Length: 191
Image (cartoon, rainbow, N blue to C red):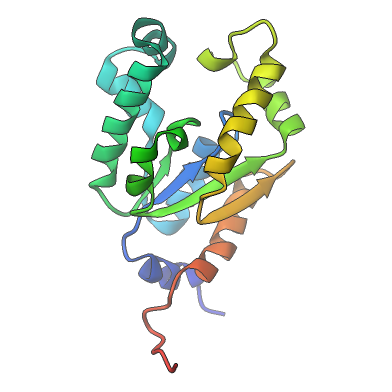
């Protein structure tokens, strides 16, 4: 059997892959091996935002509020979208800003949909400060965010439901599902 990756890369034609999903859904941990397997560059949008702002995301939220953070996030996404052949791990809320969808849809949008119980387990095990969960009841805050964002995430081109799967298993699944979204430029239309 021939290696499907060169064919998949040809079919992508340089279009970037944008990983969307809730905080803790594994966008960065899946994005790195996915980029490596495709021979793409990897960009963690949150890291670029912190670099641009010269401070951490919690500090941006404290200084500028969520609206200031979302404005900066949109600017960074716009800059990233000017490049091609990237796997981009986006921030969890990037989908809530309508203007971001035009940029996201310049590539292929993949929703990493982690089952809620697993998501909360991951977030509790992670030391990363999540500004939107700094509340008396983080479980309720997470559920509220998930319910608000689910309709936005559902606009993705591809959805991968994740429970216990490792980032490598998720990468394999994405690589198996992607061809169904993409026309093969080597196949001539007969209809």
